[in-house]
Image: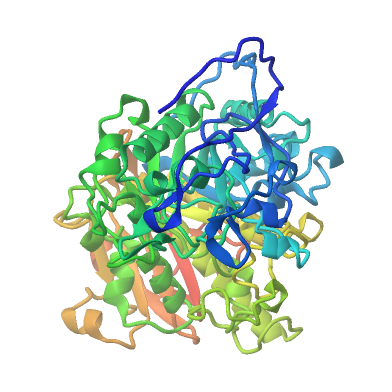
Amino acid sequence: VYSGRVPGLAPGTKYGFRVHGPWAPMDGHRCNPAKLLLDPYGRAVTGSVRSDPALIGHMEGRTQIMSRLDSAAFVPRSVVISDSFHWGPDKRPGIPLSDSVIYETHVRGLTMTHPGVESGLRGTFEGVAAEATIDHLTSLGITAVELLPVHEFVHDQHLLATGRKNYWGYNSIGFFAPHHEYAAGGDALVAFKTMVRDLHRAGIEVILDVVYNHTAEGNSMGPTLSFRGLDNAAWYRLDPANRSQYLNWTGTGNTLDLGEEIVLQMVMDSLRYWVEEMHVDGFRFDLATTLGRTADEFDPRGGFFGAVSQDPTLKGVKLIAEPWDVGPSGYRLGGFPRGWSELNDKYRNQMRDFWRGSGTGLREFATRLSGSEDVFGASGRTPQASVNYVTSHDGFTLSDLVAYNQRHNLANGEDNRDGHADTRSWNSGVEGPTDDPEILAIRERRRRSLIATLLVSIGTPLLLGGDEIGRTQSGNNNAYNQDNETTWYAWEAVDHEFLAFTKKVIAFRMAHPSLRRAVWLSGRPGTVHWFTPAGLDMTDVDWNHTLARCVALYLRGGDVQAEAGTTPDSDLLIMFNGYSDPIEFSIPDQIGRHGWNLAFNTAAPGDGGRPVKSTSAEIAGFGMVALVRGGPQPST
């Protein structure tokens, strides 16, 4: 590790590194002083990568011969920063996971068309912090925004050549620098800190989607921008059989080697920087299995995870793993340490199946609804380890989930081969837009049932930003290169009825600690009952019936153990009908058939807050009804 001091450098000075060292690709070494390199610890970046053969370390067609073409005219610069930002009395909201509602969103997409955001601030950190944006989030009931990657990233040259961009940003090159294109005023550092401060003032936490598993330098044919030219053999995992090639456990061309001390130190330094200096509240780790690999095996106790567990700066920070990569035995759902939460794709798949009339029966549905104890309980973790979601940036929006059977990704330029083919969606009878009132009614009911199920499930809910206003991507389920109206939120076409319903079910969740409990339901007789539509206890035959699609969940009120302590709650009875036809549900005698009030009905979104006079309820096809007896009620 080399260091030096250059006196007199003023803030704003642009700089890069040239590294003299071995050029021996077959041994993994790719030092080339003709390539100007970004500082891997640089706090700010200016400029963008422009396509040119000079970016490549080797000569065209001769991969073992060093290229002498100078890259300086085609690469960005690191920038010397000043540390003059005044946070004032900034205070982290410190919201327990059990009380969290996470909103996954994109800095640009969230505000690019928002009429309440000043035009010059749209699509920026400043736009996220605008009063109109924060008002929307707070009125919705959001406690944390999870931002798609904001570390400095590079747009792939092959995308730029076709008029597209790396919109999502999973192509990092600077792990200490906020992305320069997201700053309206030109100073991304100040813009980012201001955004965090203003969100904190509104009681909203900031979680960053971080990509420490690979970099924008790609495979052996990719550009030399920073790490490759500094110490290729240390930063990247190389193929032992041919060290001129990279192990590609990420599907992006290269894999960072956190088994190397210098790489692990950089990642830990970066995490601490974003917590200490940038005041963020948590991280969502892209392809987190890669971070825990030693040689090629996954180790949840040593290496990176051991370093995180003992770091006092990261205590209390929210840590969410995407629990897979494309390397050997890469799917690791449930395999991460205590203190970590995980994106639960088993939950996503089951809820999508149930509300399209598919799946394997009710046992799996009930298990996922209850927090997935079978996945997370054995390791001593709480239900909050399960980050429940039905949609995310990587797939259909909620509106598209009920309107398309297949992906429609031709606009991406990959002949519709990209994106998940197994969508687990159902178009409700017609593919795409329709004027048929019956199909539209089914779609709306299913959409409300999906969002309501997410909000009554035990665990940590994550909503895809824009779902609450009816955002569509016209069937594109992999819009990673669509920086346009496909991905920008359509604020001029807000579905106000669905927005109001989403607010209602979020408020319902926050009013009932039974849905936010920090202990598992199993082993607590009398606390939870599952009933058939006839009002009878579910039997093994009922649970194992693969075609069964109706069940009622009863949660007894009283004192409920949440993360923040014991809190009283009312009785809840929630009825689910995954059939297309209506089903009559009887309120069971053993829980008391009287004194119930309607909280919400996904077949009648405006209904609620009134006494239930009957001892039974008809649940519409693909519908869901929640009843409450006694105790606190939501304010909306």
